[in-house]
Image 1 (cartoon, each protein chain N blue to C red):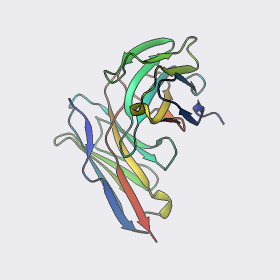
Image 2 (cartoon, helix red, strand yellow):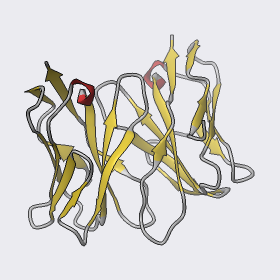
Image 3 (cartoon, rainbow over the protein chains, first blue to last red):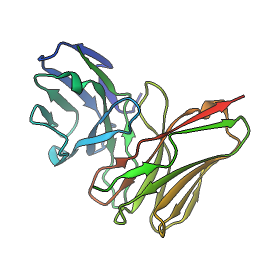
Image 4 (cartoon, rainbow over the protein chains, first blue to last red):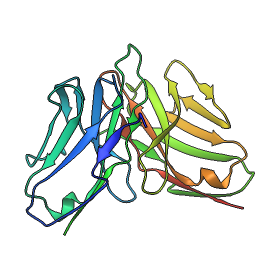
Amino acid sequence: DTGVSQNPRHKITKRGQNVTFRCDPISEHNRLYWYRQTLGQGPEFLTYFQNEAQLEKSRLLSDRFSAERPKGSFSTLEIQRTEQGDSAMYLCASSPRTVMNTEAFFGQGTRLTVV
Amino acid sequence: GESVGLHLPTLSVQEGDNSIINCAYSNSASDYFIWYKQESGKGPQFIIDIRSNMDKRQGQRVTVLLNKTVKHLSLQIAATQPGDSAVYFCAEKQAGTALIFGKGTTLSVSS
C-alpha cells in the first residue's frame, strides 16, 4: 500500500498523559498536513510542512501541540498533557509540490480518546 | 473569518436518482476547490476538483459546477448507488495555503 499511513489507528489515554502520532506520507510528496476532525464536523487544519519546514500553524493549535518532520519524510504530532477536549480523529494528508494546486491524499487517521 | 459551508447537513435519495450536494464559499481569493467523500471510520477520499478558471468539470458519474459570481459549488452524482452513501465535504484552497473544509453533507441512498 503506497498511500498515506498513520499509526496508531486508535489511542486511548488518560487525561494529563502525552501522546505521539506518526504519519508516513506518500513517497516523494513534499507537503504534509495535519488536521483534526470531531464528530459531525469537517477536518480542521492544524499545521503543514513543506519538506522539513513547518510553514503554517493554525491558531487552533495550542502550545500543548507540536509537530515535527525532521528529515522531510515522516512526521510526528505530539500532544502534551492531554485534555478530554483533545478527543478527536487526527488526520494526516500529503501532496506533491506542483506549480498548480493539487489534491491532498489523506490517511485513515488516528482516533484519540482521552478518558 | 472566512470558511466553506454546505447548505444541507443531510440528503436522502433513492437508488438510481441523481444527487446534488451544494456548498457555499465566502473567500473570493480561493482558486481551487475539491470534493471529498468520507466513509465512517476512514479518511476523506478525493472525488473531483476544479480550478477557478473553470465552471464545470466532469468525472465518472460526478460533475462539479463552480459559480464564482455567487460563490457556489455543487457536486452532482448521477445514478446514485448505495455505495455512494457517505459524508461529502467541499474544500477550498488558495495558493500556498492548506485546504479549508466545510461541515459536510451526509448522503443516504436507499434501495
